[in-house]
Image: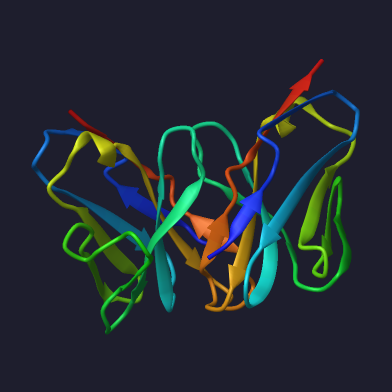
Length: 115
Length: 110
């Protein structure tokens, strides 16, 4: 298993500002994934964070709105920029320890509320 | 893209059996996964099917029919702690990239 720490666990932000979420894993992993879970809904993949290259974004998500960093094999950040109330959601970091198994381990999530 | 359909909610009594169905449409199918998510917590992995048939893991079993685009998760001997949302997820292509269904909220009653 993996221990995945996310910070902050929750935050309340003003419209127009940005929030950066950190994800730290206790082992080296090739790919890290950022998901969003809006209230009462399931998880939607935002992007795949690759070490040493640009993140790969899913349809509907763009780098200007969700810039991602992946400086090493154990750490990644997701920034949610120019916040609006529609960005209120839980953001989850996840990793696949054993490549190919599909067994994702998730962080506890970062709950964002935008006023 | 994928369409993943599962019921919104199911209710069952303690000790009973519940079957959660999931249908999907996808190109390049590369595995079907079930996750459990308790309220306010992160999802946890339950099972993985890539070939047709039944995979059993204790009280939980998962079935897959690729030709029908169909899977189910079977929960036996239900316990109160099984009250949670159960998420069906499909992988097509890249490792680790899963597309999740909306989830089925299972409510276990005494």
